[in-house]
Amino acid sequence: MSFHIEAITVLLNGLQQGAIYILLAVGLSIILGTLKFVNFAHGALYLIGTYAGLLIALEVNLTSGQLQAWGFGQLGLGLGYIPALLIVPFVVFVVGLAMERWVVEPFKNRPDTDQILVTFGLAIIVQELFRAFFGSSSLPFSQPSWAQGPPQVPFLAAIPISSWRYYVIGITAVLVLIVYLLVEFTDFGLVVRAGTRDPEMVELLGIRLSRPYIVVFGIGAALAGVAGVVGGPLNPVNPTIGNEILVPAFLTVVIGGVGSIAGAVLGGVLFGVTQAVLVATYSAWAQVGLYAIAAIVLLVRPQGLLGEAEVAP
Amino acid sequence: MALLETENLVKEFGGLVATDEVNLSVEEGERVSIIGPNGAGKSTLVNLITRRLDPTSGDIRFKGESIVGHDPHEVVQMGVSKSFQTASIFSDLTVRENAEIAALASEHGSFGFKLLEHRDSLTGVHQVARDTLDAVGLLDQADRQASELPYGDKRRLEIGIALAAEPDLLLMDEPTAGMSPEETEATVDLVEEVKRELGLTFVLIEHDMEIVFRISDRIVVLNRGQVIAEGTPDEIKGDAAVQEAYLGGVEL
Image 1 (cartoon, one colour):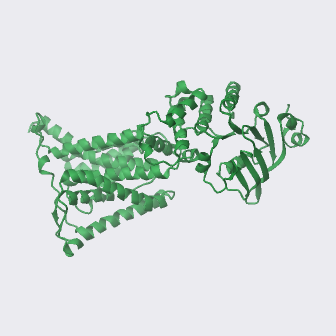
Image 2: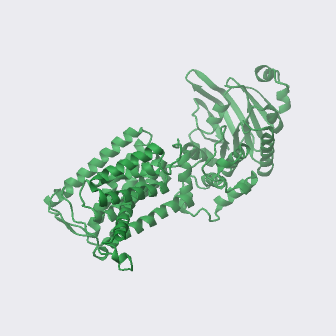
Image 3: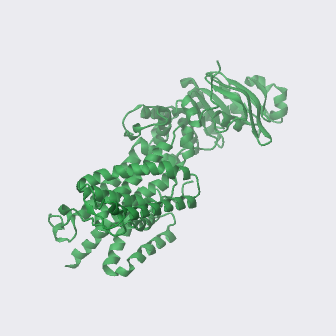
């Protein structure tokens, strides 16, 4: 394989991995920016998205876990990937609404440490529930047969990257654009942006923020769910994936700048591409590289690449 | 029937009595100023009316209805708007967006899916926002970021935000604080213009006596939480108790 084909392959793999981080980071970031809530259970939403996607798209044979013991060894609707992509965001949106109502709301005015503890605890509970019911072993979640090979178009056909990865990048781009337009150009977005800056004044003007806030949380959750569906077929599926993806997703938010959608995109691309380049060259250093970037960015720009100089009160 | 009434309104902070049996009555269309030395209870009174504070005892009625049981945002929707003491605008948003969010609040305070409406569609909200900016003379600066406005224009925008909520009663807490003489002049003109065009009822909290005497129909003087005098500007100027408690030493 010639060098430039290899370089493009690495770059595209990086963009695809970055896209997953972006889907998670945009949700985390708008939740942190508006509700001022630190959601360490965001990975659990990714986990739910992945399993929901798997069980809607395919039929799987469980080899361990309580469900298998109860005789539900064969599970799943087998509806295909497109229905999974359409249904899962709604499912996880509803999960997000419930979480906002019963976990976020009671802890909204508590210190960050309390929020971290309760959401991290929740993430572990969700992980262990999945382990109990579906078993610890990895489940097969293959890429759809129609998206396994490179796209049959000139140039891209020569690059050994499955169509699925292009879909991941494309779906991410469309969703992030929709969220951006929602925040910048709708009344909902106006209320959310004003509430981010000065919630007390918005309430004084006569607007209750609780409803826009619960919707923000639901949107963030839905994005995490989509990340789970599109990211699921690219990695082994087991109960630990949620908490494994949480740290890079949070670092993406932190280096991009809290509350900034553009920052989350920039951070995600930076992370994904760096990771892909290191995996292709010095793979042992791939993880270290991410933390090194995060450390350097935070030393030079503590507010993140595109964050405000001052954290909003 | 008075638009706004307070009846034996008492607010105690621990042992300190901030307002002491205050009976205030504001008629529709009136411009009432509340003056008094520092610590007289002026801000407490405003915060009680806007429901930022709960009274210890007594009642507040707006349009004849008691508002003591209502939340702050409900009071806004009933028609009480407040322009704040400290510059409070959304500085990251454009001038237009500042007016729109205030208009949104009065239009559908706790809304559902109207939220998703595209902001450029010419709904009532955008018309109200436009008219408001026109009224306070900021329409030509609608697309500027609010933080870029000079200080006087920021205060005008603030009044605009209060007006966009289409209130029946506008509470103004030191609207000209920190302004240059020219800016003060422009703001006083604005208040008079708004009064003339919209027929609003004003309650003004102000330190600048010149402004108070110029734009008030009636003045209420507070001292140590109690109303010590009440009357037209001329009556207040001649009131011995007021001279003693407050205006002593001030050249009038």
